[in-house]
Amino acid sequence: MDEVRAPIFHIIHGSFVDGYGIRTTVFLKGCPLKCIWCCNPEGQKFHPELKVSAAKCTGCGNCVSVCPVGAIKLETDAGNVRLDIDRQLCTNCFKCIDVCYTGALDRFGEYYTVDELFAVIKKDEQFYRSSGGGVTIGGGEATCYPEFVLELIKRCKENYIHTAIDTCGFVTSPEGIKALEEADLLLFDVKGIELAAHQRNTGVSNEPILQNLKRLDAIGKPLIIRVPVIPGYTDSEETLNGIAELLGSLKSVERVDIMAVHEFGKVKYAQLGMEYKLNVEPIPPERQERIKALFEAHGLNTQLGG
Image (tube, rainbow, N blue to C red; front, side, top):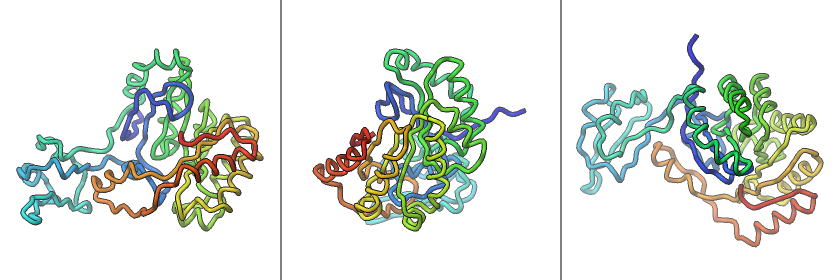
């Protein structure tokens, strides 16, 4: 039987923000949500994708010559040569990358087996031991690959490595829920309370998310809750009060992280040929402190950022 594989678009070594201690964070590709404010658009689709860094292109034309479906063209714009990629035609064969010597063309996503990934994880083992850290499996949405994640968690536990899953909570398969249950810690996103707004902002209902949150809390699963605060979408007093009230009623929440809006992912939209639609101002520090105080008033250990 073929080994199970999963597409991974990023691995961060030495992370301090995805759980406790020093961690290796693995990002699996593919997510059931389409959040308007998504800062990892390369994690949305379930397969590797072509990454285009236009500023590195010299217009040599090698990529045009090797593309088997004619998806790449060189266009002249105000005297400058630029790449034009037809994403509908592109089959993600990545032959163009092999002949791009400037790095203008690259890929988001590589397939790993559990053995291959664990070999990478194990290299950081001394840092986990010395700091109380471990491995965080995120995405995308890690539970979209439950067989892979369950085997990876099993391998980590056999080697006494702490595991966490960073999840959007929209998990409906029994296997995906089992993966959440097997992790030592969950970083669980709560993006809103009101159903219609959640559907509008993320593309999915929040009913299974809140059901999973309450059920995982009831079985005593340690939880770090991440609350994205996006002006005009999730930052109303009603929304934040509703989230704080819900979290204050739970017994397994160890910490709440207030995740203020940022534009760190903006460049990746251009690299994927996607439109960046979010147009909001940063949240002033004093407002962030007031939001933090709101959650603390419900008895919640709260910090700004992850």
